Amino acid sequence: MINDMKKSIFLFGFLCIFASYIFAAEDIPSDTYEYDLTVTSITEVREPYISGNYIVFTAPNTVRTVGIAFDFEDFKKIHNFKLHKNYGYEGDVTSSFFFFLLEKPKKIHKIAYRLIVDGLWTTDPNNKNVIYNSKDGYTLSYLNIPYTENFVTETLENGQTRFVCFAPSGQKIRLGGSFTNWDSWIYEMKEIQPGRYEIDIPLHKGTYYYAYYSGTTSFLDPTNPLKGYSSDGRIVSCITIK
Image (cartoon, rainbow, N blue to C red; front, side, top):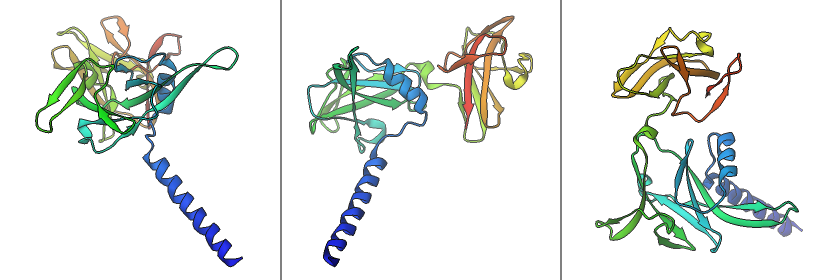
């Protein structure tokens, strides 16, 4: 009886440790709403592409497991793909494929990676862009991140929020939003590089709505896919400070 109890306690402890390892190893997105929205938008296996704050990788469901490792992590971490199923009107599975969403690394213009398919390292068959690593003697798949994707509206570590705008050079771009009572003449952005405007302002935790202005014309933040409605019903950009 005592031995059986000891075995049960040991088994329970082992399962707890194993479960904690599984959950710790899983990639948990920082923004589950945008993550879930991006997942539902994936419809087929295709070349890697950028969707909002994520880079989407896909693979056909013809193998048991698919993983991916990146150069900016020195290929030391393997991220597991997940299985996505499409259902018909009667609830039956019509198709399925593997996918992985990578939150876009900041200030990186190019990502090199390798897939691990059923335990074997390989390039991505859906990506025609490959480069040979002469140092280690193997071929990598790679993805170029557009220049504009590396500069986005975001919260900085110093508590400021940096707003980024891309517009023709030589403009006077202003920022207005719910934090200025929609007065667009308080904050004028600075042209950091030709066509790239920025401004850092302090914002407390909360959700804010905003837009950019050039003259009397307002427009959305091209670096931020999140949108909402202003008090007068206009579609504007949205950011949440956590």
